[in-house]
Length: 227
Image 1 (spheres, rainbow, N blue to C red):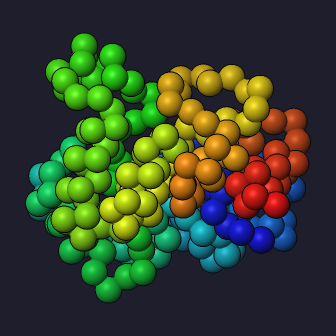
Image 2 (tube, rainbow, N blue to C red):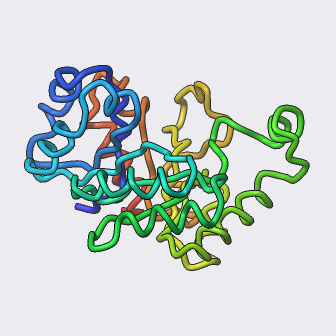
């Protein structure tokens, strides 16, 4: 089965996570472990998930001075995760430092461009960025490429930018037809994300809040694989 559908495991505890994963035995979906769960449970939980055969996208969005990020990445390197990330807004030198911290590993490093909860109006009115989202994503993605990163995090609406630059795209902001957008603004369905060129999709509440998460996961896999 294609493993390009990543489940956003935004749970408050290890117990909640493993209860959620119980029906998925034999499927071993790709998991996104973000700040909520990592800060609650720490790196040992990530090591345990890796031992159980799960692929892990460790979504900590590091953004600090280059030296600090490099040292943090050296710690992350020991976990053997499949993908991890930084914020592109930290600049090229910071991204290069993050890459150095992962030397000798197979971990893919990607850069968050513009969060899917933001839009043109927010950039203009709150962040004093007077460019459309797509232009900012292109600039940040270009910097990520210069820094030697593997790809970017963006909405599916900007996945074509990553493809144009020869980068992978990990795209949150995925909702199944009929689901609520929640706090996301730039969203698509898995099918649309496929057509827009996303490499991976990250799906959270459409799966995790469903009464039948396995059914919804398999639906996402089917839509995203064009079967």
